[in-house]
Structures are given as C-alpha cells and as structure tokens.
Length: 350
Image (cartoon, rainbow, N blue to C red):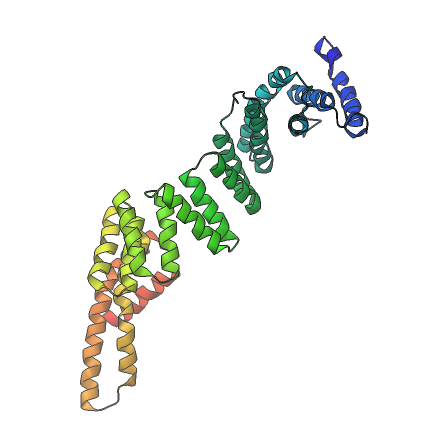
C-alpha cells in the first residue's frame, strides 16, 4: 500500500491482497487489529481504483467486513481510528453511489448489497462518535426497493425491520405488512399494520391494509369505520369510495351502494370497477327472480306471476345496462362484461 500510495501501480495492491489473505487466516495475525485495519484500507483502495474495481467485484464488501472486524475486536491499544475514518466515511458515500448506479442499470441484487452495506458502515462510524455521510433510513429504503425488485421476500422483510428500527416510517410499516402477506403470515401482517397505524393513524396505505383485513373477515361494519377515516384523509379517493360502496353492498344497503359507487365514478370517471359494480348491482338482483320463474307452473296465477317477474327483470337489466356499457368502453376486452351486455340485450329487446 505504501508503494502504491507513493507512485506505484495496481499490481502493488494485488500483491497486498495476497499478503492480507494470508494474515487474515494466520493464527498469529488473525486476531490483531492491524491485520483488519490494513485489510480495510487495502480493499477500499482497490474499490476506488478503476483498473482493479472490475476485477474485484466484492472489494467494497471486503473493506466493510474488515473494518467491522476491527470494530468488533475493540482493541484498546488500537489508536488509529481517525485514519480509519479517513477511509470509511468516503467509502460510505462511494458505496451508496455505486448502489445508485447498479440500480439504474437494473442490477437490483447488487444495488441491494451496496445500499444494505451502509448499515454496517454507519454502525462503525457512529459507534466511534463520528457523523456518517449517508442517511441510514434513505439507504435502507433504497435497499428495500432493490430487494423487492429481486423478489427476495426474506431480504425485503429484514431490510424493512432494520429501517423501522432506524427511523419509524409509515411506508416501511405498510411494505413490511405486505411482505408478511406474501409469506402467508397474516398474524404478523396484521400486527405490523396495527403498529403502523398507532404511529401514523392517517396514513392511507395503512388504512387500506386495515380495511382489507376486515373485508377478508367479512366484518363490513368495522371496515366502514376505517373507510370513513380514509375518506376523511383523502375525500377524493375514488378507491376508498368504491370500497365503501362494496362494504354497503355486502350489508345490502341499496341506497348507500348506489350513492358511493356513483360518487366514485364522479371523482374518477375511469373507475371501471365502480361502473361495473353499479351495473352488476341491478343485474344480480334478477337472479332470485329467475329462480322463482323457473319454479312456476302453468296455471293462470303462475303465468301472471311470471310476467310480473319478467317485467321487473327487464327493468333491472335496463337500469344496469348504461353502467356496464360505460365499463365496456373503459375495458373493451373484458369478456365477462361483454357477455353480460349480450345477456341484457337478449332480455331487453323482447
């Protein structure tokens, strides 16, 4: 390293690697602070060298591991921590920037490793009462996003836990809850959502998560309370208005169903689910009538009743038709909607 720092070349650092590798496993030197001090500096220089960096893809992580080992040895005789910081603090910045570059290149697995390395870097720096150059919560947020892009749910969960330990954040609670759901751990997902709402009672994502748990349990009355909280926070949230209509549909409250589905379409005319559910509300009511019609006989009274039910259904189909036509405009390839419209056409043209 001295030769390299006084005008030498990359080959000097590579010879240094060979020596450091031996010292790291040699019984006489593996427990010495200077072994890991020099190794951390060596790999930091390699990570910074344009020639060697591509050849030694794990250089930054080797540097972090070495400095971490030095920190854990906690040798009271070691007095060179200021020099360690001269390497470690800039290393944090460079590691973070490398994470950004890897993310932009869509190398998400590598981006995750670089962002997550900030956790160990900052722990050492702050453990020595120095100020880190990179905000840990920001690094962990980026690490979580990168991990999610790799599909590594286990890594995602760990990063969000670390993020919450560093700085409670509504989105971190929500994303961790969603990760638990992916592993079918509903209990932990619910607990995480509750913890998040205790700290961030007006966060829309957490409210939606809570609402969904109630809907899954068919507890529509309880769901309505949180839906109202969500609408209070976001009165123009057409999704919340739609969910409120859905909850009232389950409770068979027709006036409220029509009101909130309609309100959702007014806020967002492209809310296809609201248009579809408005139409379906009327269409679905015909099923009971059809069932009764199929059971009728051939008496005069039965024939009269049949015609009454047929007219009621025709009226219901006519009421639902314009809403489904609007849904079909928004989703012309939706087979179910097209089939329902054909059925309506058949019954309303008689």
